[in-house]
Image (cartoon, rainbow over all chains, first blue to last red; front, top):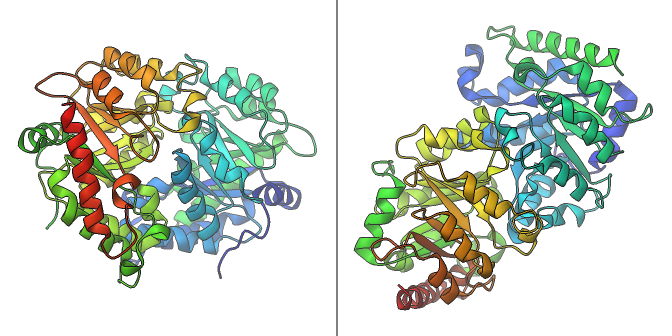
Length: 270
Length: 270
């Protein structure tokens, strides 16, 4: 079945929160070099891996987030796996393509057309360095949504986001853009800045990577970024910490346990 | 024939300059929605278009630069066109993938592995917002090369590169990185900043978009960014201004004329 953009990401995120009480985003960073041996003999290993991960985890997921790098790594078969994956995820669970794209206007139009209009993703991540041109194709589409990199969770986020104050500058720059179309990526590893980020961006949905393998502190994240009682407006992402728990043929069950466990931990602070 | 990274981009750029006296980079932004009708009935229109463009323009080219967005737009067929294109370009002409990627370390490793090790591009463009993690997979590979977005040519480059002084900050941040591995994208439309960019980055190769359709001033670009008599250390990019000159079946001849003309204009200032 073709996945269609029948509802906006904004709508789906809120509806999924209300129906599942999940704030968990499961990152499908399905690195071909790390897949369990039992799927490697399949015609399309990444797709087989994802299918079984989705079957075992969807009940805990508020959203899924494949990262484009891991699909391109497997060439045309990887791109096929990405298309099969997005079509397979239940329609009421929004899917974010983590591609961190940011280009001039005419080129951004191509990316947005490809990822949202053609492939059917509900949202993408974008890099704002080139300025507002990057957001125009999102703002022009009624149901489109983009998470803008505002503060990332990697070690060298310090170089520009922190030392050059880019996190604060980007957060302020986002303020005129509608909450229904533009969210923010706010990394969990920079705990001391989380409070400031939420103060600068009330009502905006935060996509929060860095919990799990990258070592972010879940309690601090929940305390400082949770927005309101009705809508927390956060998505806590875990990728490797869920999908690569176990490299045996029981990988999917292990992923389900990890997803359930993180979902429950998030629930304590919700 | 598989294209291999037998020589580094740094080596190939300098050798091509010495053998061809060309500083022209031809951007293969082969937008499927703008291709001449005569290639649309081919099995793989983008590939057929590129093949004929390369045949007619390679003698004027110092480098080629396909932009990833336009290939993903055509799905698996587009990715196949990209692979065929890179294999077809003569081995002594370096090929840059314009992908503007920038992600955390483990994900960047995937992009670099895919684009340089597997697909055989000589260089990629990268977005530095996430800091030095973005460059590590390039620095770790003996022959790899990346052009770092330092000042772009789009209208809203003003938002961060100019108003927030990011162009100067990035240029200074690049200074410890080897000239043989790291270049800079410096947009031609910001003429008043070109001189400062070259002063901050002596010896670094500049990839300069914005001439042609985007309206940059070639004379000013050449005057202010040319580095030394032996090695100008610049690449003047033109994409739509060359490849989409004519929409009839004579598109390749028209592209050749446009490439020759720009090559000659560049020559006046060399």
